[in-house]
Every structure is written in C-alpha cells, then in structure tokens.
Length: 422
Image (cartoon, rainbow, N blue to C red; front, top):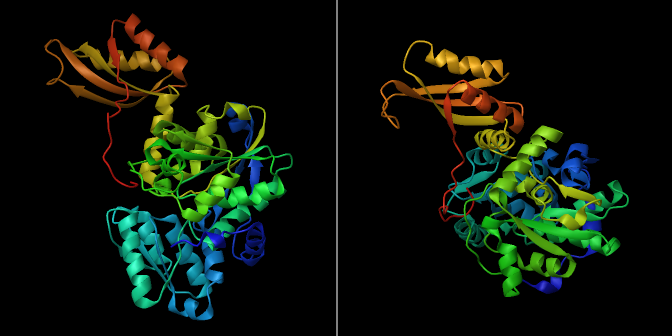
C-alpha cells in the first residue's frame, strides 16, 4: 500500500541534485530557433536524450540506488521496465557495484534488451506487457530479498527526476512554461514540484498520447485507475496506471494536461531531427508535439522549455518516421501512372520528372493488376520533390504530357490492436 505521507519534497529534490551530481550529465537547454518559428513561441530543448543511456531515467535510478542501505546494495535491485528505466538501472548499478535484475516484456525493443545485458544486468523476458513483467519482479523481490525500484512512482525516483526542474530554472531566465511528456507521471511530478515551489507563476503542462492516456483516466476518476492501452509510437509512455505518489503531486502542481495523436508525435520526431539534429524517441518528442500541433495556443509568444526525455528510438522506426515527415511536407510523393506499353513509354515518364528537377526514388511496373487496357502499363512511382508546390508542378507537368496519375494517400486503420506499448 502506498504511504502518501512520504511524498517527496523540494528538499528531497535539492538533496538528490547534490547526491547524483558526479554521475549524471548536466544536460544543455538551448533555444531552438527553427522550432520557435514553427511553434510561435521561444522554444528551449532540455536535452535529456544526451544522458549516457539515452534518457532522463538515470537521474531517478541513481538517486534511488544511492539511497539503498548497505545490505540492500549487496543483495541488489530489481525493476520491471520496457527499456529506459532498465537501462538506467543497469548502467548505474554497474558503476555503483549493485547487482541489477530487470524484468522486460517479451515485446520490449530488442536493442534495449541487448544493451541491458551488455551493461551487466540480468534480463528476464516475461509477460506480454509491463504489468505482467511487474508481477514477476515483485515475486523476485520477495523471494530473493531484492529492492524493487519503481520507474515512476518511487519518492526517491521522483526526486531524482525533479532535478531537471532545478536545472531548467537556472538555465532559462524569464521562463513562462514547461511542457512535459507523461506516462507514469514521475517526470512530470518531479519537475512540477521543483518549479512550482520556487516559481509558482511558471505553467507546468503535461502531454500524453491519445492511445495511452492514463493520466486523463485518473483525472476523470479522481484517482489512478487502470486504463486500456493501444500501440503507440511513444511506447515509453504506455503505462496503464499512473503512480499514486506522482498523481498526488500532479494534482497539486500541474496546470494542464493535453493529449496528442500518433501523427503529431511522428512529426515532432521528424522536426527535431531536421531542425535541431536531435534523434529522439516517440516518448521524448511528445511534449514538443503539443506545441507543433497547436494544442497550446495560450503559449504563443512565451518562453517555453520542452524536455527531450529520451533518444532510444529503433532505427527502423526512425526511418519510417522520416519518410512520413517527407510525405507530410510534400517532399515525397507516390503515385500510379498509366503509360503506353511500348518502347519509350517509361522514358517519357522519367524525362518529364527529370525536366521538373525532381528525383525518382523507386519505380515498378504492373501488367496484371488494376488495369484492363492491354495497350497500357500501370507504373507505381515514388518521387522526391522540394516541397508541396514542387510536387504539384511535377504532377501538372505529367498531365500536360498526357500521362494520367493517381496520387496514393496514406491509409489509416479504423482501429489498432490492443496491447501495451509496441
């Protein structure tokens, strides 16, 4: 049972800041001019994805490990995590000489599973989702006397995450707002406690995926409740129930919570990569998504910090996101074209595209499906253009040359499979 009388305090955050200082990277918080122009406010990114294991989770993990008793450190610690908390514990456990066991859902990203093992942690793959992994971790804690360290609802972990708030206040004079991704709530709770204690006029806003809106469910119910999760690009935020400690602090200190959809998260990853050269995972980009998607119009003209809280994105997923961003901007277009089934038909198509200064990325023929005119061939063509206007110029040029085209639009499923995380 959670003892809410032990809620973390501002003094706990201050103490954590000193305690973890020699093992945590003091990340930069720079203005991002290109993002500021897109969002209509002055955007500063707090670059937590630059921590050694790629996320803010190191702060809370190190603080919690250092606060263990001598005997507890000898026995070791255990946690259930789909990735970043596990990586943080593995790294700092190795550095501090504390044995670490992590229980990861079987569908946790393979790269994170492997990195945990390389960092010396014992990795157990158990359960379809984080709740099942937690059950195994609880059993191990009781059987082997291990200390369970919750990734988002432990007072020492929340205090560690709150050190970001202390740094932000020192790095950004005249701060108006902080926009924070939220899953289990530990990061949002810690930052809100740190900032509101010293500067109550600064707005603290939480952002969660529509597909993993456990904080919204808790606010509607008046207490943390289990909620359904759907697969989300922000897999690190797919926590079905916010923490009790975190929720109590969020109720007291957080001004507003909004939700963003998958396309907004993907475009946030894309904009960060192109505009700031930062490679950030879905969970880490969710705060910025609310600004880019116009969910917070009241922040126009304000000075706003967005923590980029994680950078451990799967390379394959990053490639998909980048392609989506190019399509969204009109810089990548795929269309069907109908050309004559005779010598020179294909060269006519490619010559028109080349004359417009566009680049063919891929082209395929289809003589069997979708066409009954035996004098014609269906061609699927993927073309790179400068922008949406250039894309339209290419399509108009093809039409003028007598080549009929049909642009392929994105198809969105009516529903997604149930599940927790990816």
